[in-house]
Length: 439
Image (cartoon, rainbow, N blue to C red; front, side, top):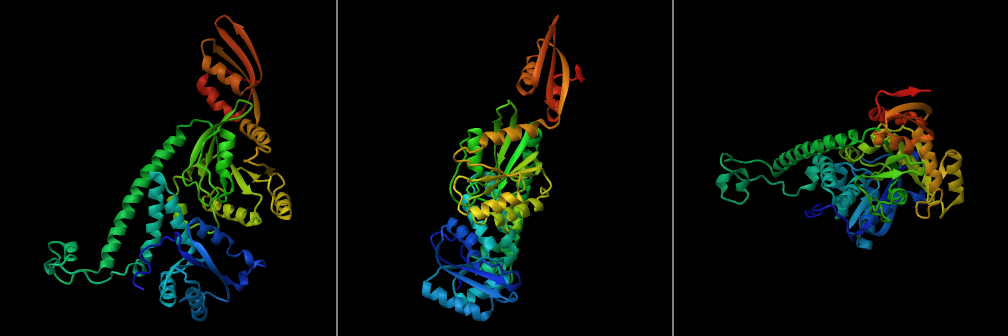
């Protein structure tokens, strides 16, 4: 038992999944209770050998599911030769410690599993720092159950290897290894927060430096097809994989609409239900694109029978980010391969303005571009701009974004009448701050 929690990864380990359902919250279709946890565990590399669903009247403070059911689970562990048990619930440190005593193997809860997946997916320095911070903040209150080396460290005079930890001036009984671990974790958390704060500032400067370009953020349940859609719309070459959390870092690309209007389109990390709060907090810099976007495109996997649950999960995270009141367009992606037409039609009924698309086949992507172009233009206004003929940037801008454009040339100047969106006036004023008449 001393080696149970040496590491939290579940790659290629034989796993039993456990779902404890409160009877008052019981769903009619209990077969899908562990569907999301199954996908998460498989994404982490685990081999699922059994599932254990237990209805409970109340949460047991010691083992979550009760000692009797814990013993039944222990029999399953022995019969299936499992290496790890993964709960679809968040457990307290005491509950995990007690369960590991009974099961005699490693026990992980839902948040630890998601943190492990994020750790394996992180590629950039920013993502790695954010994942490490989330892991440490989640781990810190659990140190008492994760560390097996809780013996008192000898003082420097002891002449042992451990004594070197204390150094000169630490003669005596010394301090517990746990206290040293906590101090080191606190120091690392402070360092990570400082580094991430610097990233936040750079991110905000980058966003502020975009001027008045209309910004759009793709949000949605993980594996809904956001990265595929970004590639289809912008010609980008963003990594795409049929797995949960394939994308952790925000990717922003320019999207030139058919009307000549140019916007910025960002792909963000996917959401799942009960996304750990520490992850949402530590990924603030990554999610800044969503917070500051002019428009959110909520990409829904229309082929999933769990579409409604996934929509609910995304809405929950957006609310936590205070983005739930932003303008949003729902996109029913993967409409070319509907698994359950009843679910699909129900989603269309609840979201009548949703647009059915397929990022893979290109279905209705031209219609999507037209809808976005209309939103970017906003309320239209007709203006007359007088400019020196040498101001090529201004003329090029008006010819690109304007409608019903007319030009009249005079001696050394040009007068242009054009219809623009109100969102485009700020850029016009920078190019020609004085000679603008509103008609």
